[in-house]
Image 1 (cartoon, helix red, strand yellow):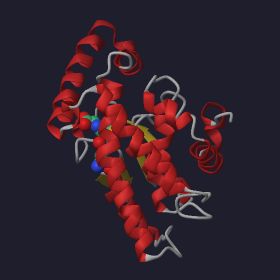
Image 2: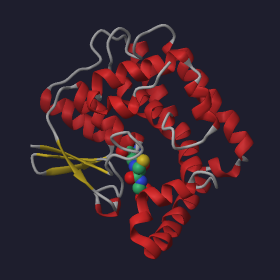
Image 3: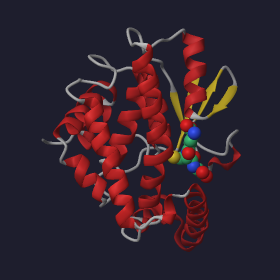
Image 4: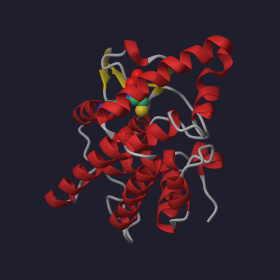
Length: 241
Ligand SMILES: N[C@@H](CCC(=O)N[C@@H](CS)C(=O)NCC(=O)O)C(=O)O
């Protein structure tokens, strides 16, 4: 029995965390049956974060380590036919999304005055006054993290420019391929689709959503992956071109 520990569906996507979404996409691409366990507070998980994978009674924290465990257990290779150079490029692309794009998107969601109230309502709304208080604590933690990481030392205008460059690079790397892995999705598509799907969530008014929304190749890719991986979310995820 395999269990994916996740936050749960929000904003029309299976999870608001790109890391949870990445692991879920991987499970689906690899056609592995899993069940879901919703976790509200990840502080007690092995790495204090989500996602986690429970397999054979062992809990693995971190999407990348969880994927490594799955690959080992099921003898999986979603990267068949790719060259060493392609694999190295995918590695660097994943690191850029997870360590750069992610923090800008995080700042936009949790700390930007336009979007923070949406996060508060979605996650803490049902808790009433207590929710307001908890949200402030979580937001303070986010501010500390993103400031320490360095991203929050830039102005919103500077961050706009930085993330728009990331999106342009994502579009250029996709080029005229159907998937980042070529004709079929490969392991990197779990990460790229997870980030693109989360960026396109309509609830958040961000400059990078507008740029991604206007990129025909990225929207076509998003729709192709949604149809393949999340047919059960077609209604909320597919985007009209
Ligand atoms: N490197 C980790 C990153 C996971 C991560 O940052 N998860 C975030 C959600 S997007 C989280 O659980 N944050 C909760 C917290 O920091 O308290 C992975 O690949 O799983």
